[in-house]
Image (cartoon, rainbow, N blue to C red; front, side, top):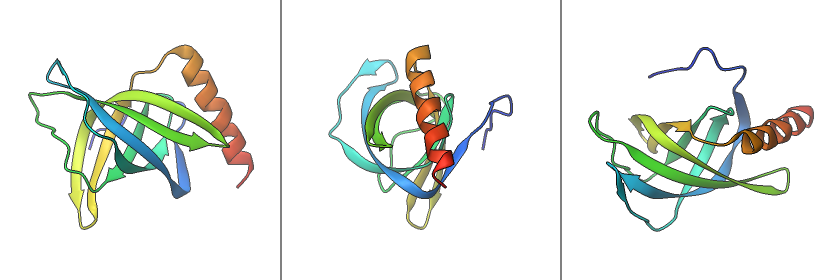
Length: 120
């Protein structure tokens, strides 16, 4: 697995938060899959670890871009990202997502994660 050690922080949820995702692009070709359920295990402004029962395409020579929507502190956030790693386990698949979000969305995410951390 690849980790970004230069990240300022990564917030791990005590209980994973529910999310919906869809595939936007595979190998540079625009697609729009149906939505599927996922759980966000941890997240930072740069990346996330999600779990899903769906086996999404991920090959070393390809790229798969997703859009992920989730609720945090009563607010819905949508972030886009690229799958950078995939690991199968007994309950499905874990994915490492490299997030591609603008500064405004990053700031919003950080503010909501700070609120989440204070609620622990």
